Length: 348
Length: 257
Image (cartoon, rainbow over all chains, first blue to last red; front, side):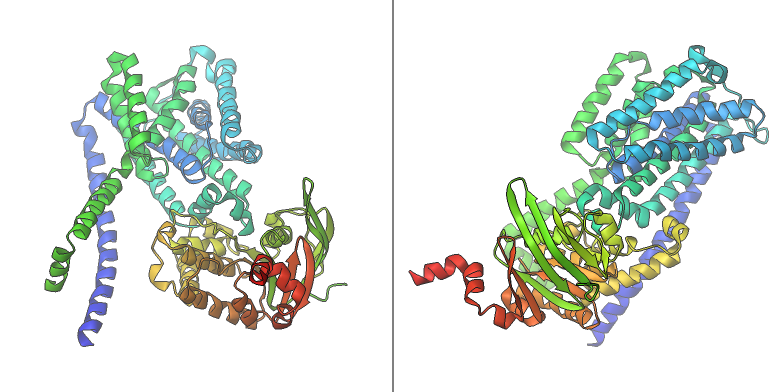
């Protein structure tokens, strides 16, 4: 009796301790990340810094897809549109003497509104039709880069006005902002994922018919997913403009849509780490194989095939998949040797 | 005919293509259990789909507290206070029991939209406690953080009922809640439901387990080929020869041979 109470007691304490440990661990991880992030520009060369900055920016844009494609299950191909609007729009306002940060936020708010406008009709579409409709939107924006010459510089492109912060070297400043934006968006998306938004979006994805019987409007939640995705795309675009230093329509072409999709599917489409790991993989391979041109595509294609075939949850699912595999094998072994297992249990 | 019952179904006609599924069906339900029985294909689930707004009837009205709800959408019917379960539970397999139950709360009218949108910890914690309590009432308190896909069909059905109750409905439609459940599961399901019914919730239940229906429902309605063929207290209705023939058709014929 007493020992049972003690066991329960110790189990309860171990639950609270493990929770406290987890919080402490998360804070420690964030502090460590902060230290590494601050120190990085002092040790990395310009190219390396550009690469990690690009990874952070791509991760943010793809986090938007984690919400829209991963959670709510919509085949949204509009992300490059918002990414481009973030880059071009912020640059336009900034060039016209609106403070850079304000420009970025105003454009992000505009993208939320645009997400609402595009999302309302798009939420009635599914699968292939939704893909085509959102692709049309991205292509439309692409046309705007080419034709709205006074704003975008047209096909010739436009130079980006570089922002300076506290006299920090612009590349380092951009890295700080990118990693800050990534951590902030990941935390926000994580919070969304664990609460009402995350639950409702998954309900829309997995139990579409039953959703309305719960009093939840699929259309409304799809639009919300679309808007979150648009804001993240736009914020990432704002930073991407600074990273590119020169904007031209080529940078936001159809290829980029496919690249975003490759990132989220290779990484793991409904996980936050999936976007980050996918973006890292993508940018690193792309930069490593820069001089091989065509072979980049081969590597991505083959990787995507392998991932879809063997790890449908993306690279991020390696650990749980492996754990399940080994647990299964152990269980099989135990069931094959029942006497040994029983003897072990008795000894314990 | 006007507004005396919580749910009044009048003259509902439904046909799919050339098949007449429901013919001029009338039904009333008030607080407490009302049973809806009949052989497979009698149109019970279709009637549920009409009441919950999934199927628009060709003719007839569905009144909830005197307000016509037929032919609107399943969403607006749900928002006017009707919760339902499905014959095969529609849960989110990748989510935990608790998160699935939370969806019932998520579908309620939200009092602080912003706090709920950002998932403010205090509100979230309070609602989680409410959902856990509900699952505990149904004996699932130990499985809160299990993923639903690892559960037996029976437990999944119970989770779906708990989720529907968390919506705080005025009318609850249960489509064969006990089918595929073990005896203990049926008990775990029936006891809390009876408490809700006693407290005034109207529960319309489609069920093949006649013992359960007899125990719970003071009133049953029998459907056959889309028509109401009998209604009344279950022990009387189930004695009627036409009901026996309709319900147990093949078996009675087989036993006569």
